[in-house]
Image 1 (spheres, rainbow, N blue to C red):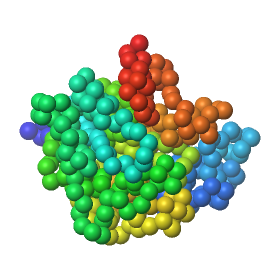
Image 2: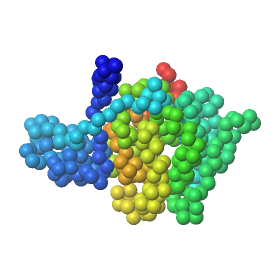
Image 3: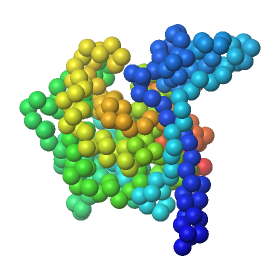
Length: 351
């Protein structure tokens, strides 16, 4: 019995590893100041490198002898393990949100794309379990009526869905709609059977098999992790493909009320966010940071045209740039806003 127990402990020990966890932005140093104490950087994708003994700077990269000594001044590694929710460790609960009232007069093709995704069994419909939430109830399978969107309703008058519009695109800020979707997810409980919860934008070409392969090798912490996906910005948890581990999802949903009360997300006076209310992804990131979920770099999860770091040189200011889907190997690619663009990209991934 003692030998058997010792062997079990040895196996557990071998399954543990240490991973890099990025502290919340508020705990890190600004670019241009000495980061020797904080050992992390506020700008995503930057790392704290020693330039001379006792002095370190936040940089994208460091060349020894040119930029300094270049010793990486990083936070302590955190013990981790693979997800133990299921045997395979990479199962997915996936969901999308279809917005009928976008607030914009520009034509949206999301419903057409969504219905075709369902018909083909692609995107979230290739996950172990899926849901589609919306501000309306809509049949997704025609007259059959077996697959419908789940309509969310406003929490109360203090948390309206249509409280502000985004400056650049003129669409409604979506935070309160998505917070209510998360409440529905929590109440139903289907997410809890799976290792990871993944929210995907409808116009993101998402390949669940690629993500399973990626997550099958991913370690998680006891606090749960979320994957930050965009470099060189203030907050890099982009909602087009938002991946959180089981414990991270649990913590986020358990603290929705506290985060609504604590975070000033409906205000337009936050310089770090362009002086406009927060979208759903920023609210989720700040809430998870507030409640101790660990942040891990996942910059190879989503090739997102909304993230300038992904755009090639000469295209950094071109928000209409699209990745070449026949060459791109990330689990998600964003954004493909018409059925032709979307399904041409999907087809190209099979070449």
